[in-house]
Length: 134
Picture 1: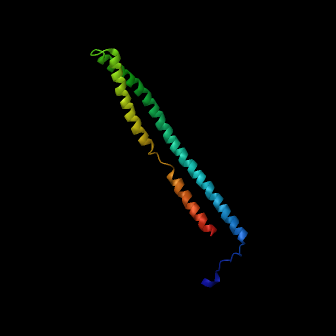
Picture 2: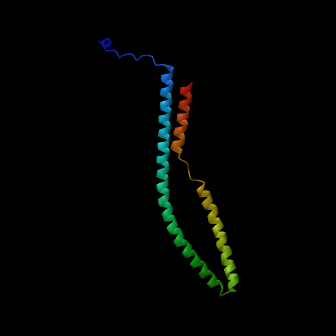
């Protein structure tokens, strides 16, 4: 009874048809990779935009408060020394602090990662395509 049901055989396909199918599959994979990359980049851009807006507001307030604090330091030191010397000392200390913050900020910026899923998927697809062409 098992022999009574047989799947119909597919006719032999030409090499041109096979090559066309492979090219169509490659085009579909490339389109999928582009869609994946766009989705990843869009997601990261939205998250980054929200973070940047919060950071910009905080940075603006921080700049005002730092400026007022430094002015208070100059006024405080000017009681003990000439105002010009007090201003010079405060500006040197503030410059050193800015240099330290800039160094650590640059190091953290290097930690930003590329879209890893997309890169891995593209590598897999390239390997698959190489195997199909053999």
